[in-house]
Amino acid sequence: MHNLMLLSALAQAKPVVPPTPVADPEATYNPLRSFAPLVEAVQPAVVTIEISSKADLTEIPSHMLEMLEMLGLAPEDVPHPSGEGSGFIIDPSGLMLTNHHVIANADEITIVLHDGTKTSATPIGSDAAMDIALLQLPTDRDWPSLQLGDSDDLQVGDWVLAMGNALGLGTTATSGIVSGKGRVLGHDVFGREDFIQTDAAINQGNSGGPLFDLEGRVVGMNTAIIAGANTVGFSIPSALVQSVLEDLKTHGRVARGFLGVQPQTLDADLKRALGVEATTGAVVANVFEDTPASQFGLKTGDVVVGVDGAPIETETDLISAISGKRPGERVQLEIERDQKRQHLRIVLTERPVDEVRPGPAPLSVPHSGDTVSALGLTLAPLSPAIAADVGVRKGVLVERIARSSPAYGRLQPGDIIIEVNRRPVDEPKDIERILARTTGSAFLLVLRDDAQQFVAMPLP
Image (cartoon, rainbow, N blue to C red):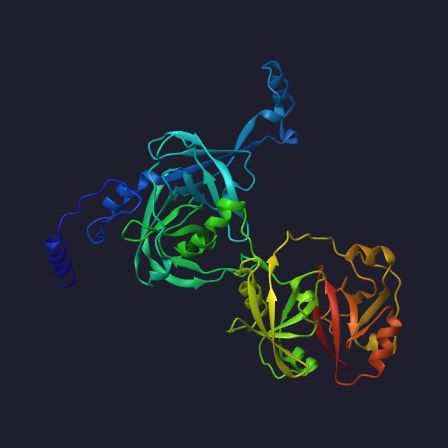
């Protein structure tokens, strides 16, 4: 009966005439009949990207170097293919989009159109965290282009079409449905992830290609898959892409709001140690100098529970809320300090480029006291060289941790203990003296991997 009903519906369906590719397709396509008209309409603006980078001279055999010399070629000037991906044109002027990871290491970018025509492209702007790149094609002609649709209108179960250079085979079309929305994969360190999940087949080489709705509008950029999974692919929503386009076009980067704190998710141990009433929030583990946080009065130990009226439950919530604001924008933080709720209004600056410094090398000057030994810790004084390297004035180095000890899993070798129970420590004996007067648990401020965080330590 089901097949008869389907045949009857197909028989009554009106024929679909493929329109001329335009920036705003007007037809709505019938997937029960065929995706062919949709594919034909949009494929002129879907491109293959070929990436070349200069050859690594250490990998070129000596006989090849001799041959290049005979031909009068310099080895460092010889490009070699190093990757492929996909992209799509969004403006007749030649603006096009792809993933950042597709073009990140490119010395030369070649665009291959559906008809086989090749041209070059120049990066205009790129953002590694969101994995979005904006490129410019030559401006000597009008290019077939696509319109970005509204991904917010998508519903789970809607039909979608994915296109791209799958496995290097050339432009490939696959269909499916929206399997889920709001997926978080942990790729974006700023927490602005909202992936569309689809069962339209996405493979290597599809990266940067478009995901279409049935009106021929781009609702996502195909970006990621789960290795070994069966048709589980992810696309960056068009709404997220549109939110950063102007930044990429104007500044070549995404300008993010910056507060200037190192946040840490409030857990049960920190709640008890801080004595706060809040059950969720982001604890301020560090306030950096000469930042909006320091200038407008945030303090270490404050618990941020809201930003502009939106609840903050984890450190990721705070990072996402702030990075989603514009530099120069004023935000209102709701915090808990000394068991009282307060509101701070802070003007954000632009997030600077993060610098990653190497962690401290272990020292071998052990010191152990009774409580410190019972915790399973071997501590060492912090040398002036390491203190200068990590940017602290005082602290004590965690050298070793005994397995199955109270500190195991809470502290790590190489951690630098800066405070115990809100008191600065300069030598291992300072920690022993404070712990000797403490019962229940201690409250440590620790520098780890160039970031401060609180650690609640139960005492034996």
